[in-house]
Image (cartoon, rainbow, N blue to C red):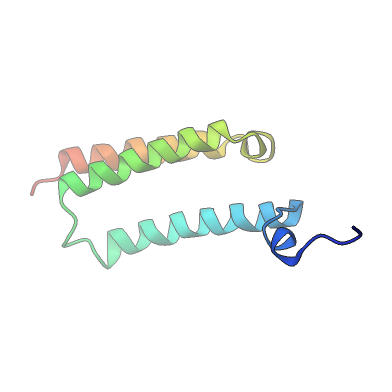
Length: 96
C-alpha cells in the first residue's frame, strides 16, 4: 500500500498544475478572441458575438465559484465578466 496507481497520480492536481492550467485557460481565451476578431471576422454575426459574450459572462461566474481562482486570481472573474459584457454589446450593435 505504498504507492498509488499511475492513473490516480495522473489526475491529481498540484499547485504548479493549477497555475499551468490557469495560464493555459487565459492564453486560450486571448488567442480565441484575437482569432475571432481577425481571421473569422467576416463569419461573425451579431448573434454569434452576443453568444460569445454570454459564454464569457458564464465563464466569469464559474471563475467566481472556484475557490482557487478566487484566492489566486481575484480579478479573473471580474475581467472575464467585463470582457463578456463588452463583446455582447459589440454583437448587439453590429449590423448583419
